[in-house]
Image 1 (tube, rainbow, N blue to C red):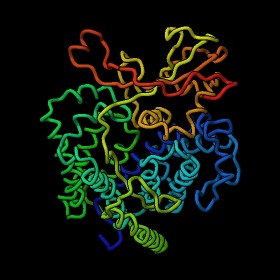
Image 2 (spheres, helix red, strand yellow):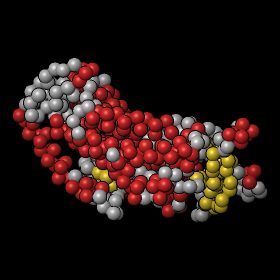
Image 3 (cartoon, rainbow, N blue to C red):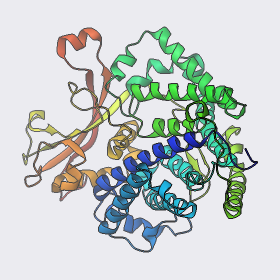
Image 4 (spheres, rainbow, N blue to C red):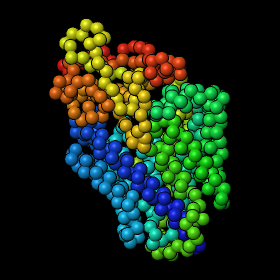
Length: 472
């Protein structure tokens, strides 16, 4: 091994790159299928209005130069095509400089989308994909060994994901220190999965074990990433196991999967791949990689300082390209689940609640008898924001009225975001309203008696009956 490349990590790089390509594919597919009602020219938060107010330097994006729905769709589907090519190994068939350019394309397209995505793209896994995607540009292909410094930077990103999440919990809700947060979390998390009911019903002592294991994995194990092998591989493997536990317990888009992919890059897979000397790196490539490394280290100062700040920021980017970010999740855990249920009626003057029919969303709870589905790593953006709307109307102020307006119009693009609409697009409701309910998982006895996994109780009116020609 020379000073620049890491012998024995060729297979680790390959597995990481193919996994990252798969996540890019999911991200671009979600963008292509959901952007029109969310961000399109007639969307709830239109991109043209955003770029007219926010300068390029604050949100670099190709859409500052031009925007149309057709152009956005072209960018998103191009991202899907490039991700498929990378997944199939097209970068390995190119010269080194060509592989770098091919990996740069999906990153540039996705940073353009995220920077105009507003509320719909305000999640930590968007920045994590961009940070890791930027590092992936410079990893090279089989024509050169993986650079040691870039493998270190991937571990640095993984460290911040886990350690930042651990610190935000210890500093935040007291239930993390009391080991009681998982008495509530499986029930109140943003989007439960098909096994969440079972996780919630685990014995409380086991919940304590879950929380304690989480603290060990997030506060102690990440430090071991920077130790010699095989300890670093054991640390990465423990993180992978923890992330798979989270995959089974809920829907967190691609957060868990991209964390797993980055952890795979820390594994020493040389016993599987066999020891072999990697090709020497050309001088221009070494110079570029060292310059990128220097840039990342300089940009890392503020995120590193944030880790040890009493006012630790969670899921925040200090630079507009999302090159080095802060991460964290669930610094506080809700004890009660509140859901916004949207209803419509064909009656001009509804006489009773029986005249109202509910819209069913794909992922968020609605009908108490409908069991949660598994959607992750696919990201249902509207469903996630509906969970925030249940926490506080302030989270929905900018877009909720627009959602109701489009339901009253029978907007087909908006209806495609839903699991079921009680009103066809050509016969939209005359009135819509929203009501707030408290949801809880049923007990085993209640599940056997009713077949419903949820029990819900009316809390209050969330949005009064509204028609197209009147406000709330």
